[in-house]
Amino acid sequence: MLITWRCLLAALGAFLWVAMMRDRKIWLGGKAVAKLLGIGAIIGLHWLCLFGAVKIANVSIALAGLATLSLFTAFTEPLLTRCRIKPFEVFLGLIVLAAICLIAGAESAYVLGLGIALLSALLAAIFMVLNKTIVVGGADPMVMVGWEMVSSTLVCFVAVPFFDPAGFPALLVCDPMNWLWIAILAFACTVFAQDLTNRLLRTISAYDFNLAANFEPVYGILAAALIFGEHASLKPAFYLGAGAIVLANFIHPLLRKRFSSGDMRA
Image (tube, rainbow, N blue to C red):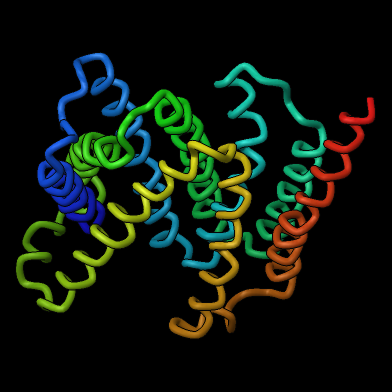
């Protein structure tokens, strides 16, 4: 239910912003809108998996699974854009995969949650690459957010009776302060963040963006330790695996510089 309201408010906020700009239009044509609605459905499934992993396991496990974004993007971006697979990106992805296996072995009670988090990462890798192909074609980033949030809302709404049957009545009687947090999640963390992401994808690859996004699990895990005290229930192997993921992120620019200079000399 939380994600449903997040997407609905984000769609309304994005379209309201576009409507206020006289030189921008919401309707992009049937074919373009259909593509955006399809991508939005993938985004909705991504969020369902991510938040579901948090409920099944915990915040740290869910974010550790999400940190495989670079692994999945190393394959999805070349496949969807028909460019060459870069061996060093696959190598770094394998390091991340080994780290995930280490985490799963240490936290066997959370294997299902970790698996759902991995599915969330795969879906994120797919929609990020698809968004790049659209935004480099000249699409308005904020309009993209609006249409994608429409289908994300529908996907999450359909899932409510199956996974959160008490969601509707529970939300109506919740603490009013929760609505403030939902509004912040919708407008600051979705409308603004997704619009900025789409703009960045005009100039950088989906792999580069997702590699940088892999730092989100790092400070997310630290926040989970401070706020929820999750560090007390996680084993040392979890932190070893998380450290390997962080290391892979630091190694990436060094390897890219090395191999890029090699290609130039060749």
